[in-house]
Each structure stands twice: as C-alpha cells, then as structure tokens.
Length: 116
Image 1: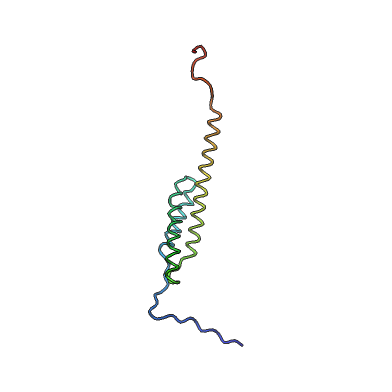
Image 2 (image 1 turned 135 degrees about the vertical axis):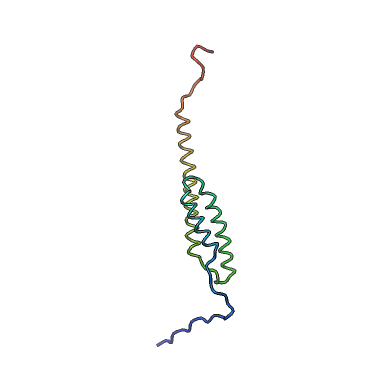
C-alpha cells in the first residue's frame, strides 16, 4: 500500500493567495457588456473587459499562483464576447432594416407632373 503524499509545505514568508481585483472587474464589465450589447452601448465595457482580462492573466502568471480568480476571468471574457456579438448583430440588423426602408421609399421626382 502506498503511503499518502505529504501536503506541499509553504514557506512562512509566502503571501496568502488572494483573488485578483481585476478578475472581479472583468466579470462585472463583461456582464454589463452582455446585458447592454444589443443596445450597442455594451461594446465599450466589453472591450475594456477584454483588455483588463489580458492584464489580469499576465499579473496572475507573474504572481506564480498567489493571485487567483481565473474562473471569473473566463466567465467575464465569455460575457464580453457575447456582448460584442450582440452589438455586431444589432448593427447588422439595423443596417438591413435601413436598407429595406430605403428600398421601399417612393422613388422619382419631387416635382409636380406639369413642371419640367
């Protein structure tokens, strides 16, 4: 029978692992971006969330495991991409509706029939 492995011993001067504050900000901005994405206003918070996410991942890598929060980062990134997708869809739908209305508008001269 195998003996249980001893738990990894931390150095007494090592800091306690803490959740990255940028991870919470990425999640919040991603959520705002997803909720307001169809109004095209969600594009700004979603973009900021993706930029912060990149910074937070870099900081977590440099912290060597003492910064946590990667599940929040993943969810925030997903929500940000959903917000960007909704904004792009809203722009395409608005363009199609605008082209349809333009195509069905009355064409021809603005003058009376006897003027020319």
